[in-house]
Image (tube, rainbow, N blue to C red; front, side, top):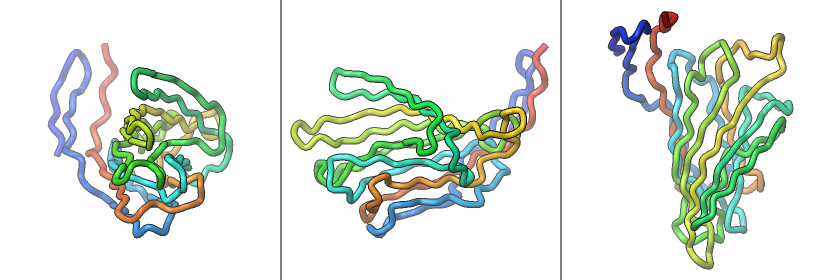
Length: 202
């Protein structure tokens, strides 16, 4: 249900709450999660997750692919906070963008990367698409340091005029190590209600 009103020359709408659409729980074998045939009737999608890898290291990375696009049409920007140090990094025009850094098999026992990924206006047929993730993980076996991440991913496929005319219909998340997510790892997709188009501000 959507509530509507007016605000400063704009049409104002309040969307319904997020509704659960799909969930994957790992049995400890697979290293790829695919959300396919994503409904286009929502305005936003949101993923919540608790993930850990079988990779024999303190951490592992998770790549992202949208709509089966394998071209170098992704860019990422991220912030990472560890103890009192904050660092930033970017990766421009890559075919294998890293969306997540999660705990590996030698991270402290019971440590999972827990957080969320959002894609506002994912179903829009205008403009490039973005995923925005924030999560906390504990990878350091020596000091037990927590690491806080905030990462954005742009998808800008090569099409006429440089603007994709389709929404996000498929998202594939894969462990770069080629191993598997530990049993009990979980990721859930939610959709938020479609809003009415806003009027042009006067």
